[in-house]
Image 1 (cartoon, rainbow over the protein chains, first blue to last red):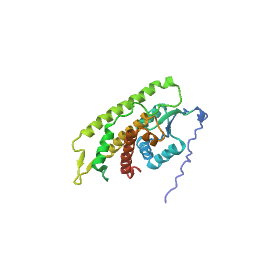
Image 2: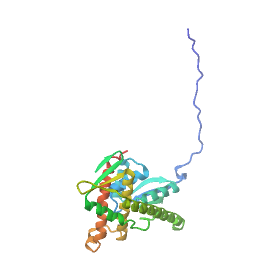
Image 3: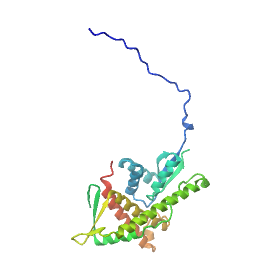
Image 4: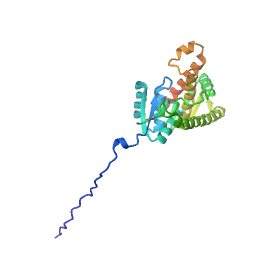
Length: 103
Length: 154
């Protein structure tokens, strides 16, 4: 007859974080913004977003439509270095892209 | 246009080939960035970064110019077909490259024309050649984008 072994009760370790970084203290980073212009073809803008950010077509089209109808679209928030990289890549497609402080 | 295994074959009439070569030979048109790196921020702090952007674009322009010359000088790049037209074979990467070249010509001409909102008044006002070249670029860009269309959803 099998015997029943009583297992000790295991409780997860619980750590209490006394200090957490408030949202205001986080690095605001830089926003990569694409601005509307009357020259770049809409499908070309979508194509460029897909190439630069490796986005799916639906996401790229969403941001392209924002650029077209709202005048601009915030594409991503990054560190200064990454934001600069993305602006370079977007401008290599002749898109009107800039980086602005996220503050 | 036919597409198979990442290779695109475009059928061009004789005049279309001539127009494509014409606009490609215009490359490069612009000499600097289409926009500053940032619209806000400290100009002095950003000066070095602005220079870096200008250099990156100049490097790309030089590389694209080298590739344009090689493309146009390549024997058999436009293979003549039996109907008197031409077949242009491009890989997916070459389609992206050609799109960039054509867009640089289109946007470069637009910058030279003073960033107009409308092109028709300029065409009527003595800038027909530049406006026509911009429209030719757009026509070929549309065909290239259409070719890529099915394969870009992933």
